[in-house]
Each structure stands twice: as structure tokens, then as C-alpha cells.
Length: 262
Image 1 (cartoon, one colour):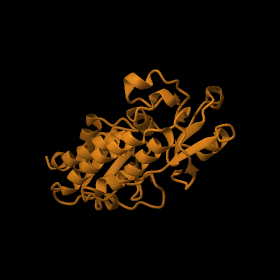
Image 2 (cartoon, rainbow, N blue to C red):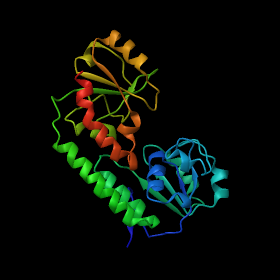
Image 3 (cartoon, rainbow, N blue to C red):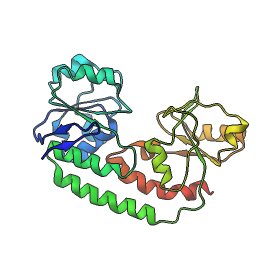
Image 4 (cartoon, rainbow, N blue to C red):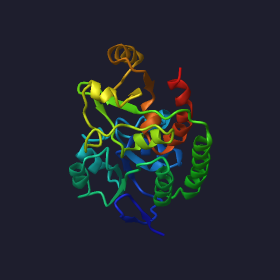
């Protein structure tokens, strides 16, 4: 039975694959599916689960990969993501890696297909199905929980320049599970913005993410004084990591309305 990735490419089951993962959240998922021994390479940002990944060779970052190091690892499969990895790099790696598995989850529910794709291709379908059952239960609980009033939210991922997320991102879809919406600020998926009266009129709550920029409570305090709007620090991994972390992420979402209402 073939398994279809985000580009519509068909992949046969390959239970003895040699995998290089360029996606931190999927590295974690592969480990949780019992596939760590098949991972022959990972990025320096692939940090979970820490006790497992420390034994897996690093091959650079998500964008600045060491092509020669990957070549020497002789992988059969490369796992990439449309948002996190650059196409020219992936194209170069495709010259010698036989199978490129492309991922692109855009909504929390897409994690079920992601888990089934990883489990199906790499020989861990039973574990993937068990994970899907747990995830579906957590997502159903989130959707059944009281949400509080809707919020117009500006989710900040970077400073100098300030950057946020657009409405078609995974993070925006996570926030939508609470009935929270992000403003439309142009055509880019991760647009830059400036603080001004027009923008602030569209915002009820500002969220500062702990990654990729390392916002802290000190940033929260300073920004609240600057803009006169409530600001909340949120766990970026819980909000943006799909795969295994999404199970914890949907549970984390359930607590955000209470935090925002303090």
C-alpha cells in the first residue's frame, strides 16, 4: 500500500530505511514511534527527546545543512517540510537521496495524516494508530471545552524586525481552535509589521512566542507598557510543533483562555 506525502508523491513501505530528518518536530515523532534506530541524521534544532537524539549525528540546521555529511551517512530517505526547509537545498540532496518525504501540516487535525505517513512508510503503523487515537481524544476534549470570548490575537515570532503569522499558518489554525483570530497583514505567511494605532485597533491580545525568537517575561512587561494592550508569553513548541508535540499542544491550548483572562 503506497503512502502519499504533502506533494502527492507516493511512498512504499520501507521498514529498514536510513532516515535523515530536517524537521525537529518530526524527528521527535519518529523517535516516539520507535524509529530512533533508523534515524542516521538530524538537525541541531532536533532536541526532543533529548536522551535519544543526542546519539543521532547532527547535519547542520534546518536551512544550512551540511550536504557532504548527509552524503556520507547514505540515507535512503530524507524527511523535509515545506515551511522549514529551502527547496534548493532539498533539490540538491535529492540528487543522491533516493526518497524525499515532504510534509506540510497546516491544521491540528493534519497531525493524524502525518503520523500515519511516518508510521506507514517506516514500519510503525500500529504505534502511529495508537498515537492517532490519543490525539483524536485530546482534540475532541479541546473542542468540547468552554473557550471564553473570542479574541483578536497578534502572535509575535520575532523582534527587530517584528514578525507575526498569517491566517493560513499552523499556528493560526491552533489559535482558531479557541475561536481566536489573527489579523490579515498582507500576502506573506510570516509578515513583518510595525506597532501603530491602526494595527492596535485590530488587536485584543498580543502573544509573544518563546521560539524562534526567545521572548521572555521581561519582553512582556516592556511591551505592555509600550502598547497598552494585554501581552502573554506562550510556549512556542506547544503552539507550532506538529507531530508528537501536537498532542501536548492541544492540551496546552485548553489553558490559554484562563491565562489570557488573568
